[in-house]
Image (cartoon, rainbow, N blue to C red; front, side, top):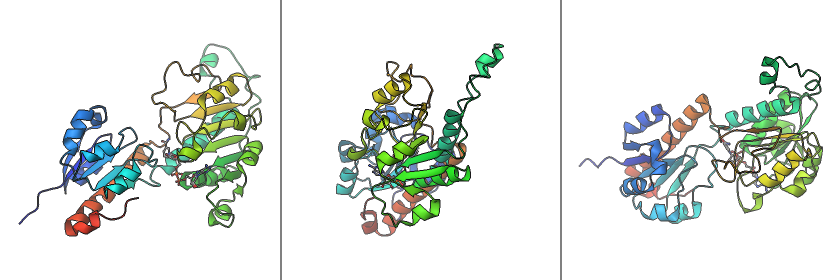
Length: 326
Ligand code: NAD
């Protein structure tokens, strides 16, 4: 007897080709508006075998309780802070992130913003178009070659950033308490392992690539910012909450650091009343470091494939679908 087709619910944006590929095996409800329609999402999940999300859908214990058939959650990205992993584990729901698929996009963002902030010369379009000629003011930017990049969190993205930075002639130092001194990545990337404080003191640019967990909340606060050189720039593409936004705004306003680029915020979207709103030498982007045409396609294809595999294996052997969660 033919078994009923399984159901996949997708609550945020996904590449169209990945939806088509899922549709060849499953019934698919893909609607990026679902993330803002919690009642409709809950209704669809009552019968769903898999849920695919980006970073806005909160996969809580309560949401999972309303989805008794769910065996897989696909995450169109890397950070898992919007997914209650313990609750998934307790319910034998496997979680599939798109590990590595958007690393290149993030790494290029870090390099681009490092170049922009250290040179400080690319925001003069309006002045030049108005007939001003701020040549003297913009003559003193820094080259990245020979500058030191401190990478905080030396996982997949941190290591790729290090490789690109080394290609530009930067010296790379890195801090990651979970990587032993003899880990292969140190000599593979040419990065120098350092303590957190020493890496901050050495840096012309600091880039953060840690997960948001208890030990990384406000990792870069007033005390740590005070260790930076006055021209040093800070780039955060990891998660809001890792950088203390008020302390960073103060440091920028008081000229205690050279600049910053933030792609992620404690509260997204950023509120107009944020202390960052009128801070100078600051590049703000709306959580897009990992989003490019190519990364979107890679992320969607990878997650669709992993969810498909989990559901099809579960059909062949129901015990497999109840396997280890990640
Ligand atoms: P990863 O798991 O490969 O690496 C994270 C590293 O952080 C690990 O090596 C871990 O040992 C280290 N770490 C943990 N606690 C630390 C601490 N207290 N101090 C220093 N290092 C610590 O993760 P990844 O794929 O490199 O992603 C890094 C971050 O980037 C994640 O937070 C992810 O959510 C974020 N991200 C953001 C975007 C975006 O669009 N802005 C896109 C992709 C990933």
